[in-house]
Length: 317
Image (cartoon, rainbow, N blue to C red; front, side, top):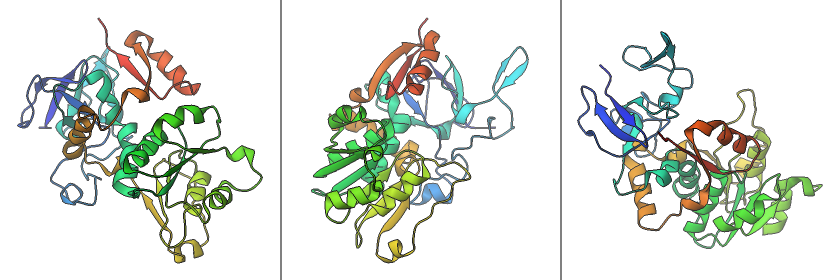
């Protein structure tokens, strides 16, 4: 039988299934789109968060043990989206895909740490690891990119260059530590050439948060030779091909990838919540809208129109 639990509105455990020993009804948790079984080689490794059993699987849509959905409507199954299906009053989730958190943490704030904010923050702090006084370029100033910039600010970067096709985003990005802004459309040269000239050789660290393969290439080619590190955060199209001249690698630039900021959901996310509780991390500035569940389509409109960073969906009676 699967180790599962049921979550209520605002992610409070309603009941637990057979085999669940580390959670109980009433616990506050964050559902995570990827998981941590704690038993596989990846979970036991200090270098990986790619759980063999519960890593993100967009095709699965059912519970692991019996291959069936726990939801139906008029006799027809409704499949589990990303293993969480949180756009519902109740949901059923594998125990490995929830992180137990401080019950004093406001769920209507810290819920955004279960996805994009942790992804960008961790990409910077856990993978790029900029040092105090270093220079950082962030490609894409959506929620993930701004979280990456926030990580650079927390790390003490002296210069954070934001790259985006929408110049109107720069003003908001200043609140996350971005000091310079580059819109590729404003230049005849490639954006990597522009950044290399701006910084006298390239940035120390770069993070690509768009999923656009050309931005990935630019992020890699704009880091300084000898010590520059570029981190790919965005998810590319399945047919995309990353191309760069091998000399960029021979000149001691480093290219890395990351998934969910290299955070292990159950082991690490509770500590990220504590950063918020200790006022080391602001999450309110990432929240631009709050809408009731009955108006959920408004949230999608905000996203598609580029009007918001993160929208909290309120479950209301």
